[in-house]
Image (cartoon, rainbow, N blue to C red; front, side, top):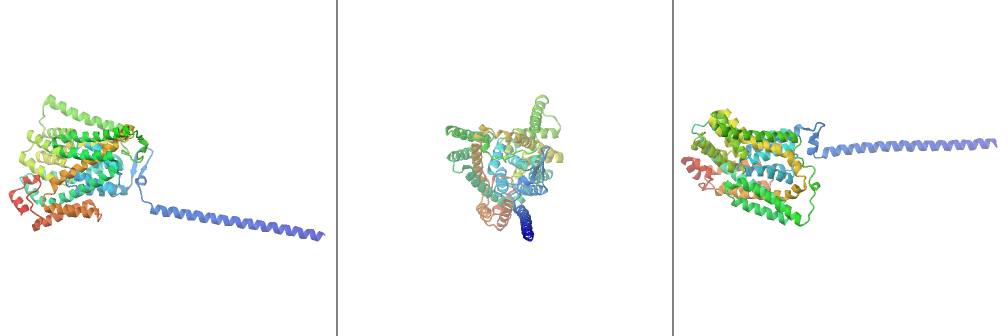
Length: 504
């Protein structure tokens, strides 16, 4: 009996041991499986990080002091984008907008912005005095990287044209016409290729703005038609009026249809001023208003002071601060100011007037030409600061408030109409550019080829524009694609020999 008890106890101990062993084995198996899952998860995370496309959220890292750090890659991208635009931005503000749209909306790169943001910035710049295309470039730089980005984009876009026009002003010894004769052969194709980009941008923007909305289509049509028939002297007030009218039409439409447009419907990621505070913006507004008022006061009390640099600054600051409508408005006004104040003779000014039409960058770069011709290097810098300073300063000052205003219900209801009207203004630019650029059968051929290269073969706008310039120069030298006598108005400053050479 006792032996049977011992045997039973032994069996129980053996069974307990087996259970413990099984439990330990199962536990060890679970631990191994857990470790394997953790390794697999880590591998998937690494794979995802490798495949993930970097966004601006990865590049712009907010820090506690309210500023942001921009990676070296982003600075390189900005330098490449804005630097190349500064070298190939031929054709005036209309072509500049098309190039900017292609670079920052169509390409969808790390520096890309939405169509809505682009059109809002475009509309804002149209409503401000100053060089509208330069202001748009500056605003895009601010959106990308704050105030440093704005200064960088402005400088890269502005400097090539500034340098060329300053040099031509310093060379002022009767050779301006000779320079124009030489470069006009190259720019014949450049301007035709720039027209191609304007056309592509107009079609793309119109399609995206309307999106099947008949009210927006009506706004686009009205804006296009009115802008085309508006005489140049009235542009300065008609463009802002069209933008406001488009917003009013859309507001009335939403009110009549009882559409509840909430500010929350807007894209929350659209940040317009990353590190420019409202306090800084108020200071800039005060500087702008104070300098403008002081210049008017000095002129009213003391007349026009004798120092030539002060007179240059006074004249060009007034134009930069008070002129709406861009280069097509300011250039005739500048001619009146320059001749009236006896800065330059009309012949010298018209040479510069012609040259700026075929240089990259904004047409406001005629200012450093005049400054350099009148007072050398100091004059070039003084006139550039006077002409560009007010408009660029206003962009830095307005953007922080724009980010706030656009969130209100009134502005939210008006914005779709404003952007539709802006699309109409870009459409009207096709007509104005057509009248200026397609002056020969060769120009039409180059425009057609460059449209195909951009649309079907996806070549970047700077490449197609430079290609158009070289193509035009080659065919003009061969005498193919003429007659070239029906050339744009600025060639009236070319010599008879040059016109004969071009016309064949």
